[in-house]
Every structure is written in structure tokens, then in C-alpha cells.
Length: 308
Image (cartoon, rainbow, N blue to C red; front, side, top):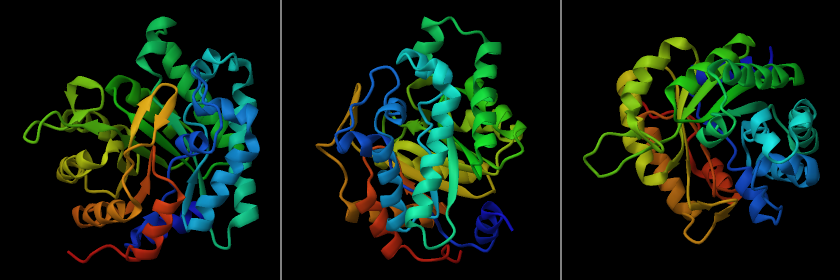
């Protein structure tokens, strides 16, 4: 039985699955310079051993899945940092570093996920990328990650329905399990949950158009802590499959993260317990959430989903 098959069996049995926290902002916190062009993707070229150490720290914190540092390692993103020709090399390195971390720190079965991000709107506009070029970009990275040996592909910070459709189709074409993570936000307490930085598309509308394309788990991720529960409520109303939640805390001031107002591990645990009650089964953290947050989740979250 493969690592993911074992993980899927645990999900089917109602176990709570723990994701890692942020990789990019944790590198930032540890002093790794963030690239204005490729953010944390450039660290694969400049500081690979710190990337590996971050993964090891999450493994020791008790996670079931670590996400390779490929979020900002698609070809168009790396090209902004002058690293486009190293796209395959750096994605392969990201997966290798994650696997090395498991070899060094894991005393149990842990899956490695490959991350794929929507091509930012600014890059699509600056480079005048066609739909076909965007589709090819997602497919290239998905197949590099599959060939490198990830256990699953996690689509992250999905906030544009057309781009998300291309990403889902690319990930599913590898034959690997595909998890889809949406980033959401609300304007006011009684306003609809929208896709992040996208004032024209509600989360509910996006789900209606995308769920049939594939993906075996849907997450609310890279979403402010206070917006996560409302987004999960929308998701549970439209999706009967397994659900994940991993929020961010703090603020991005390009190219670095502001750590002034990060939620405490104890308060994050309280929020995560609420997400479990709504139906989230896979819990972790995104930007600003580090190993201390994840360790507390492992120590205090129950092993199984609450009985309805």
C-alpha cells in the first residue's frame, strides 16, 4: 500500500490529518531573503538546506503531510527571478529536499505533496500569456512534480475560476490524487464569501463551476483566520467530500511577510477546533503559521472527527 493509499484509508475512517504550516514565511522568518520575483521559490537555489530544515521541523512537530516548496516555482514565476531555465531542476530539488527531511526526521509514514499556485494576474498580463500558454504552464509543473515522486498534488491559493480549471485539469492528468485549495475573503459580516482579491466571483459560484472537473478534497486555505469558518460553511453546503482548512495570519508586504500580529498557537488551536466542528478533517497552517502552531495542533486536536 502506498503512502497516499494509507493516508486515504485514514481519511475514510474519519481520522484527523495534520498538514504542515507555512514554508515561505518560515524561510522569511529564518532570514532567507525573499525574491521580489519568485518569493520563496528562489530559496531552492540559494538556501536549500534551510528549506530542508523547515520541512524537518514540521515532521518533528507531528504532521502527516509536508508540502514541497514549489508554490512559487512555476516557469513564469521563476522567470521573474532569472531562474526560468532551472524550472525542472528546482522543482525536482524541492521534492528531493522534502524526501530528505522525511529520511532525517520521520518515525512514521508522512506524505509529500507538490504545490501548484494560480499564475498571478500581473504575470499573465505583463507577459500577455494566452490561455494555451497558461494551460501548458500548469501541465508542465504538474508532470515534473509527478515524475519527481510526490504522493499528491495540492492546488493552492486558487482564486480565479478559469486558471483554477486549467490547474485542476493539469493535476488530474498526472493520475495523482488532487486536492484543491481556495483562498477566500469577506468584505463585511453579512456579505457573501468571495474569492480572494477577486471581487467578481463568489466562492459558491466558483465551486458550482469547478467541482465536476476533479479533485478528491477541497480546502479553504491562505484565508484570514476570521474568514475561514464562513468559507467552510459555504463549502460544506456544496461539497460532500472531505474538507481541509489552513489559514494565514499576518500581512504580505512584498516581498516579505509582516509578523507583527500573528495569531498565537493557543488561539489558532481554538479556531482549528471550530473548523473541525464545521467539518474540516485536514488541518494545517499557511503564511505566518509555524512549527509551534502545528505542534500544538498535534498535541491537542482529537484523533478522529467529532461524531455528528
